[in-house]
Length: 102
Image: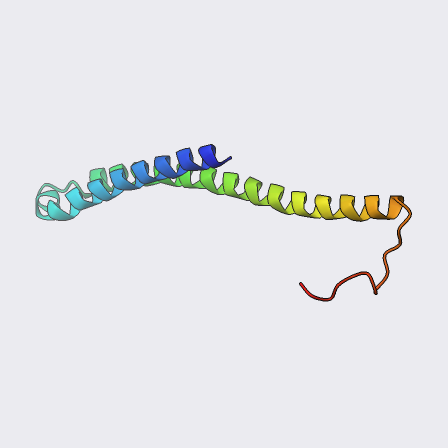
């Protein structure tokens, strides 16, 4: 999971760098863009790059959500198994045996 997460972070960084580079070019060349009425063409270019970046960010967020699901599932399943095995070995859970400290 960590390797996949690292790959996704790398892809996001590459896409973000590309978008920032294009935006920097647009900002520095705004006078030329306005003079030749290229606003729509550059707006479409920025939209395409941003859409690609958002796609990678979305995949990374799905991966992060799956990872969090497994963490929560594992914690609760482990607690359930511990309590189940404790009671199956003939022990009883009472308030005296449960510590109130975290």
